[in-house]
Image 1 (cartoon, rainbow, N blue to C red):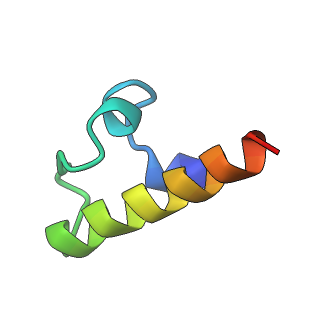
Image 2 (cartoon, rainbow, N blue to C red):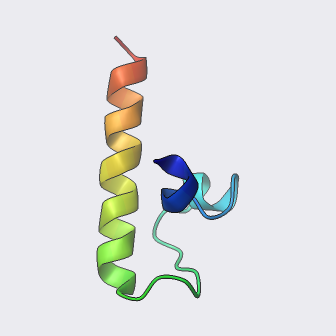
Amino acid sequence: MTGDTANHYVLSLGRPDWDVRFDLDKSQAAKTRRRIFDMIAAASST
């Protein structure tokens, strides 16, 4: 799941609001990245 969400292993995680050329809907892509990363963080903290 994170392979498609985090296009760059450092930048996408550190700056989820930065878009990449593969983002067709840049606003929605940033929202999706933040949501997915939040889910991963919540799951790893349990």
